[in-house]
Amino acid sequence: MNSGKSNVAFTAPHFAAAQTGQNILEQGGTAIEAMVAASASIAVEYPHMNGLGGDGFWLISEPGKAPIAIDACGKSARGANASLFQPGSSIPDRGPNAALTMAGAVSGWQKALSLSDSWKTPIPLDELLSTAVGQAKWGIEVTDSLSNASLKTFDDLSSHPGFEQFTIKDRPLQKGKILKLPKLADTLQHLSVFGLDDFYSGDIARQLALDLNSAGSPICLEDFNQHRAEFVNPLSIKTSDAMVYNLGAPTQGLASLLIIGIFDQLKHLINNEVDYVHLLIEATKQAFEIRNKTITDPEKVGNSLGSYLTEEAIQVLAKNINMQKAAPWSAESQQGDTVWMGACDNAGRMVSYIQSLYWEFGSGVVSPSTGILWNNRGTAFSLNTQSPRYLGPGLKPFHTLNPAYAKCHDGREICYGTMGGDGQSQTQAAIFTRYMFKQIGLSEALNQGRWLLGRAWGDKEHNLKIEADIAQPLINELTQRGHAIEIVNACNELMGHSGAVVKHPDGSTESATDPRSDGKAFPE
Image (cartoon, rainbow, N blue to C red; front, top):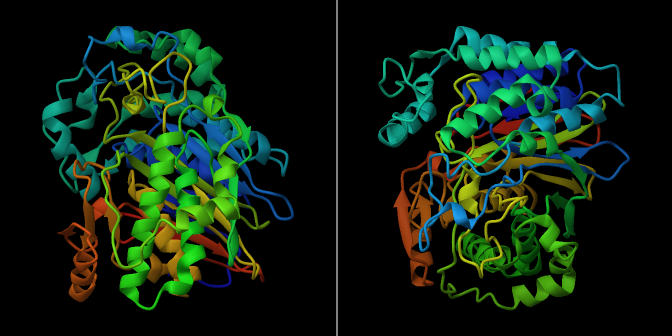
């Protein structure tokens, strides 16, 4: 844990992005300005996890006001429908027919900055993006995470036109090598001069539309022109410790809140560590069943999600849990690669932000003129006409992405989150309950061994995975309660890259980053 008397804090799963955000805060920038600068930086430094061709979701807290959220998720193209696919087939994981949805991340930067500009005289956009431009131009050092993703996807993606920019001499990326992204540097430089809206209505939009069309994606220029990020009201739940906030549809924020709510109802039954872990796993099953039945395009969902978060509704779910026996598990699962980052500025404003391409390197479709790698969020749709996520034009796909924020009854405020597909909701619950219920230090709450029910990023198995550093007696007792367990290596990247920032009532801050990532947390 990094703590001290500093009243600003920043954490990110890559050290260069964390330093970029912290530098903006130390210049007197807002939490939003710091986050935009870091988001551009990490799009360069962690290109397998996120980028300008992906989506983003924001939770923003300003002292004395209710938190506000930004949905920067792209909709499916107006030409995206089931007729693109052969009868009986499924949406592919990669390639142009996986690149079905608009990229919303840059619009989220723009929307957030419009709020930041009402707080203070803004830092010029070219200053916010300058570090990312330099990183792309002069090169980034390949980390273990990037190298592993490159090795894993090389056979599938290296033949895609334009993907050679994510290789070195037509070979997978190796740790320690320097990767330069000159096309992306030029694009970021162009946006810094002409504004972020150029991504949707200017030269960048036209170049992207042409490149995507040439690749075979149904996305067209009109899809760019019509896209907008939106301010939305977050979901919330009141527990015995805090008001906890997250995003509604199309994210799985509802599941994250349900797990914490169910835990809060039954935590008095916890007598030991086995009870603690078992309860969170069983709460996850209840939450995911609701998630899988309800979360789809927000216009289809309407305002119904709050009804699942009432005390009465939580009590009904809690009654389904047997503290001595694991419930069956066969629900559909989701994977995804993501970055989460958190910030607190010198005015006490906090940001919880998440940005993603979905799978490693997204669809693998690269715009050769801009260097932008496109997301494969279209794979979250279904070709089953009975599915609530049936593919059609102008729809938002289901997202595992969900940034969290909590306002504790004792005056502390916490923004926290992680990457990791199904693991996001589970890791959020582990961090929050370890820190609040078990009163474990912030860094240790992130460091301790974790578990994952379902799929994480780059994983195909739906079972319960537990890191080896959780004591063997715990695993044995969980097995006796009916959990089918796979033991994985300790401190495993499969469990995601988590982080957290806490603001205390006296204005001081502390932050932490996950040892499973290449991250850094400030203050030091």
